[in-house]
Structure formats: C-alpha cells, structure tokens
Image (cartoon, rainbow, N blue to C red; front, side, top):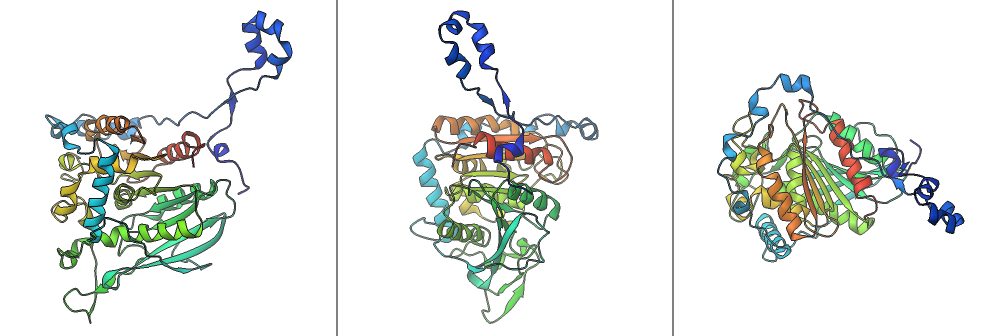
Length: 407
C-alpha cells in the first residue's frame, strides 16, 4: 500500500465555504479589504465520525432482553459504586492494584525486558501487507511460563505511534487480521498478544508442588494450584504487555501507545491500561461488565467470565477495584482516553443494553476529574463476537481524527 496520511484513510477533506462566499455575506468588509478577503485560508472540514445503524434483521431475531434495560440495574447507585473521584485517587488505586498483581511493596510495574529475536519468520501469523520486519519478543515469567509477543514494524509511518492488539482466548484470526492490517496501513507499529496458553503461546509451566515436573495447562480455570497469597496468577496475563511496553519505550520512544483487544483481549485492554498510564488510548471490545451486571446478559446468563475475570478467584484484586473504577483509571491522564466497545447482539457474552445503566456515570466521573475522556460505543450493526468493520472505523476515526493532533 502506498503511504498516505492518517486522515486520508478515514475520508476526504471538505470545506466550510469559500472566502468569496464569506465576503458576499459582508459587503462592507469585502469592499474595504478585497485582497485580504480573497487570501483568507479556507478551513478544512474534518471527516465526520462514522455512524452505524441498528441492523434491523439481526434485531428482529432477538427478544426484548436485548433491547430493554435489565432488572439488575434497578435501584443500583452506580455513583456510589465508584471510588475514583480525583486524579490522586487514580494514582493511589493504581498503585494498590499493581502491588496486588506483582505482590510488591512499592506498587511499581516490572522493569524487565523481553528476549528479542529480530527479523523472524512467523508462520503462526496471517500474512500482513506493508510490514518491514517482524520481531519475536519472549517474556519469561515465574514457573518457567513463557509468553510470545510479535512486533510488526510498518514500511511507512508518518507519526511513529505504536498499538497493542490482544486477541484473547484463541479468538478466530479474522478480527486480529483485519484490525492489525488497518493499523499497519495507518502507519502504526503493531504488537500482537494472546492469552496465556492460547494461539502461539506454550501451554507448559512448572508444577507449583514439584519444581522438577512440567505440566500442561488446558484452561485458565486450571490455574488454581498456582494462585497463592504470595503469587497472583494475574501476573501471567498482565506481565507480557508490561515487559513489551518496556522494550517499545526503550527502543523506539513512540509519541503514544494505544491498546485494542477482543473478548479476553478486551479484558486485557481494560485492566492493563488501568494499571499502566503509558497506554495513551484503549479500545476494549466485548471484554467486561461491572460485577452487578454479570447476571444480566441474555447469553450466557450469568456471564461469569474466565479465570482472570472472576471476583471469586481474585477477591483481593477486585476487592480493590470493580470495573467502573478500572474504566476510569484507563481513561484519566494527559491525552488519555478509553472507548469501551460492546456488541448489543453479541453471540457470546457481555451483550444487550445493561451498560446503559453505568455509561453516563463513568463518563461524567472522568469529565469531573477533568483530565481524560471515557465513552462507550454500543455496536448493534451485527450479531457476532468480533470487532466489526463499523467499530473498527470508529476506532480509526478516534485515533486519526479526534486525536490526530495529539501525540
């Protein structure tokens, strides 16, 4: 693909009007300074944000549970459920969450770096166009668990931005391919992540009871023996992006880093930016709901989430912060913003419209704090568990138009 400007990817520029038309509206001014009026620069009209209509055919196939507020929102005071009220609150809460994940006294993210193999062949990945080089980053964690992150460097970039894409629990590769390719086409260097034990990540780690023995884990729900008061298994999920971030900032010094994820990757794109303010903009899709709404989605009901999502598996971590506070933590800070994407007719999870009960509260709380931006995109254009073409167009618009003049 030939290099193009970021905004050209979203749409063509128009004009608000010509200088001549402006002069005609004010004859006296035009007569006084005809040359100045003729030379006045013509302002450009930026592309409008994409709008996606409700898919009438898909909507007709779903009942009222997908269209009306659920009983679970009745009588819930979302404002009282949120503990974040100031920017200082976000720093305090973030440090407590980091300390719980890494069992650290200082509340600081790890400073480790990955092992790096540059210019590798990556048969595990789809074929991407416009890639100058692929690097393999290996993150070594306790119990000899390894996580692999692929870094795709674009042939052309006008801005030098980086983006993390997290594909979650082995989601089909179509969404990853479409999203990563669009980011590469827009000049982003893209890092590809997957959940522990999924996609290209190995399933082997050391037995916590017998260090001489290696075991194979089939599901995150098998992680119980590794979860102890001294070790949080959330580290397996959150350390790879932290270590990859250290590498990116050290090697490339990008002006900003964005994060996008689907499903379990949407959970990661919710929680990790809450813990690491070095993520500038985040777009978690189909990845979470606050705990009071977990029984509300029609399919499945209740939506308990996988191991890393569950409060009964991680009472200390989620006792510090419910998801509404995590949303705010991911959004507060200079140039920071989060757009949560939920599919109303998602065939898997976190569907329907219960989010309408908390969306204005979280958005308003971030506005009151006054440094950052949070919003929710309800996507009713389809019935799949994906980041749809419509949602992706909104993400690209948000990055390259709404935030086009930001780092």
